[in-house]
Image (cartoon, rainbow, N blue to C red):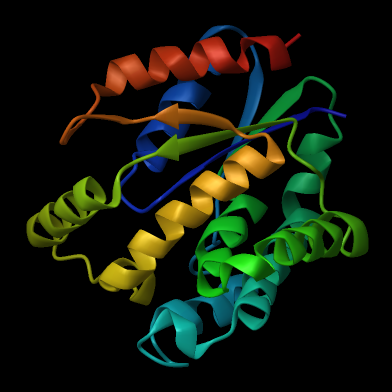
Length: 222
């Protein structure tokens, strides 16, 4: 089997940028790399996810309960794995790098629940995706910690510059704050490698974050 590395974080934490930088650095070092981004927007497997994030089930994320919403994302991962990237991961010389994974459910859906239900939800989620569905467990999880106040500022700037419509997670101030707290809990409980991506009121330099990521993944590459 190859290795599976996952990068996750709040919206505007730099996931896409850092995933691309990591993949490029690994290729420069001679590794065979498959880069993935979840959800698989535009694919049939992500139809339920797109309906949910687009507001078809309600404009508030909490209109769809944590367990139901989680299954939408889980099915997308399962179908894409079985029909596509399973063969990549079966190659012992390949590193699969994902932008988001089961970790996203452990943040965005966990945040919908009361604190006393968090432990049970994470146990259910890990058993459902990795036990019942048989999805591969990441060898290394990198969580990009971005303070929600900074994330909101970056999201607003990105939306104004690109005209990109924000999904129901991005538009909800309450959801972003709750997800930040849920992410700290999940990363501590599940042993993720947490990378702080801000200093004071500003994001850290992209190059500094990338360097820290390379140092963190080094032990998982041999």
